[in-house]
Amino acid sequence: MPTLRDLLADTRVHVLDGAMGTMLYERGVFLNVCYDELSLKQPNLISQVHEAYVRAGAEAIETNTFGANPLKLAAYGLADQTEAINRAAAEIARRAAGERAAVLGAVGPLGVRIEPFGSTSREEARAAFRRQVEGLVAGGVDGLILETFADTDEIHEALLAAREVADLPVIAQMTISDDGNTAYGTSPEVFARLLTEWGADVVGVNCSVGPVGVLEAVERIARATDRPISALPNAGLPRAVGDRKIYLASPDYMANYARRMIAAGARFVGGCCGTTPEHIKKIRDYVASVTPRQPPQVVLTTDAARAAGVEPVPLAQRSRWGARLARGELVTSVEIVPPRGVDPAPMLAQCRALKIAGVDAVNLPDGPRAQSRMGALPSALLIEREVGIETVLHYCCRDRNLLGMLSDLLGAHAAGLRNILIITGDPPKMGPYPDSTAVFDIDSIGLTNLVYGLNHGLDPGHNPLGTPTSWVIGVGVNPGAVDLERELSRFAWKADAGAEFAVTQPIFDPRQLERFLKRVQQYRIPIVAGIWPLVSLRNAEFLANEVPGVNVPPEILERMRRAQERGKEAGLAEGVAIARDMFDLVKRDVQGVQVSAPFGKVEVALEVFR
Image 1 (tube, rainbow, N blue to C red):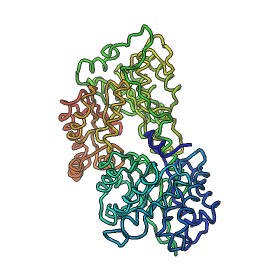
Image 2: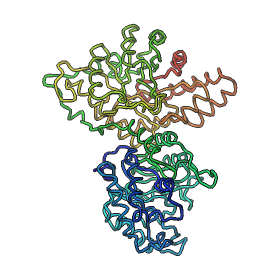
Image 3: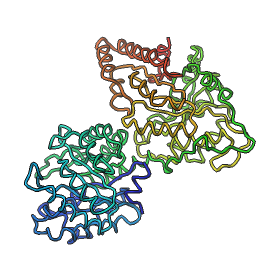
Image 4: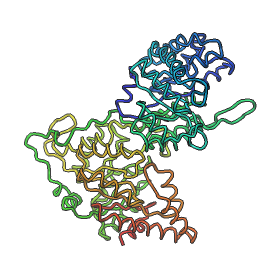
């Protein structure tokens, strides 16, 4: 049975449930009823809602106790039943969760203003919260979730009450208004810092103004705390339909924004008002497609075993690409995507042009943005056999289980491939086949460990291979990640796992790259900077707004905007000029550049080198 502490410890993304009130209203419960009391009067109804969320894939469910504090219950003459209502709600949730989900005791605001803005003292507020938490703990919750608070002083008292009652992890969430701040004017940066100082285990935002506002808040919170972040938005803003308020954000829309929130740093995602089990199922489907089934377990290269009598092949002897890296020379590559169909001729013609131009290698992405194309591995074999230029094979963890990966890598090596760039892979939900599934047995860190072992003559089961492989091991890295500390931590793991070079996301801000290089210089891993020639203003805006992890500064967008006003050709010329500027500015600080061929335009990539 998972607990909130377990979910916190594994460092993975997890899904919470959605709205309770919305579901009860849909089942015919009138708004003038005390929803919290239903845990005593209609326990089966509450259990049915919980069970629906568990079936949808929620890994943690909240008790039906958002308003079950003595001050709110007093309006229904139920203040003296505070502990009983909370205990019953926790027990119902515990039974419904079974062995499949953690149970979080939900605690909302008191519904009154506390000092200095109201007549309720801090001590009175804390005592009220304490009564509620005592009931929840008696009912067997795994943790507590303080949610929809607008007043930092009030949530502080709730947090203190939680700590006084039990040693349980606490998720602390504020709610924001249209301006991005709480109703009291507190910014996400400020309340994130305060909640961190006060000891919240998770800091987040819920309810509020829908997915867009919550995403923006997550981006701001990520810069102010080192704690895991939670994001539980409403299903959009409510709209009046007849005499009802309806939330119109679709499950697919919510799942799309869950993706963006995760990219921005959220580790706990779910829904608030207006969300249903269908919303949670869509979110869970997305999270399942990006979460490795096995958390990364890094074996340090200093501790890695090797087969008896096996000496790994030196980097300089593995490939021409590896030799240039070993000598400290600048390497150049161009990224082209494999064809959509079965005809490799256009791709081979592009590669011949790159070879003639003196480019060192061709980078081949593996199903980028979850698009269905000719496989990167057979494409690489065709290129090296027909053209004679080396390839850097992108190999992603999305589509293959561990055994499939091992078979691919051994076969590709036997066929002559030597350079590999290991990536986790874009989830299927990003592509044109959103109902397809992902495998993700392991992520890029785990696969780096695996390939390092193959280079030392051992398979993942520590069985000797005979002759070791001689892969040149590359990994991806993003200097512009919103959660930069997490990115740096993962890069450290990749270095420990055996990475020998790293390719960055497209660089549009050399200052950002410079700061990043200072943070990672201790690992002594050659960095290959990604360069993307923009072909239009629309292309620039797409990268800036739709591609997670790519940072296009306002000054670059403005350059493209001014150029685009002079026509399409001027926009393309400016995009190439920007790429040249990036090349000139970064080549002194990195050991290579990877120039992308946007939309298959190899001639545009070659213009950058000229």
